[in-house]
Image (cartoon, rainbow, N blue to C red; front, side, top):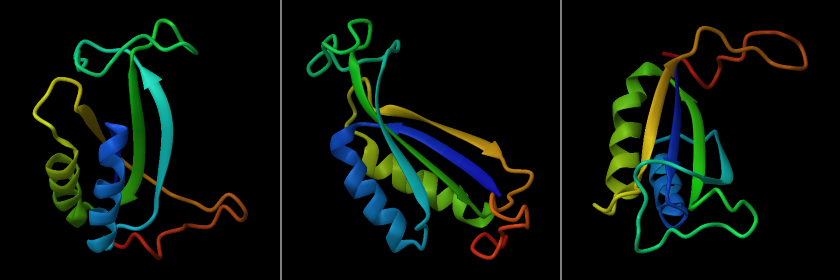
Length: 114
């Protein structure tokens, strides 16, 4: 299993999530945020009133998926997340060693078979 974390533009999130669902990747989490980075879109990014050091509105998508779905998920995030301008975001991928339910500490793998 892999965990994918993708930082994407807010206006691209809905299309990314819809296409992930079409591929059977349904169980994910989304966070709204602001950030700083080397690559900003100078056409759209300005200092935040809430966080004056921040300049980019972002959405963070997190999903844990079987290894065989990783390439398709990365392709979807790339295809529907890009604008070809600086500030399109970044994707991280890490290995998931184990997954258990908070309630019981039992393995929670029924939706994540490899």
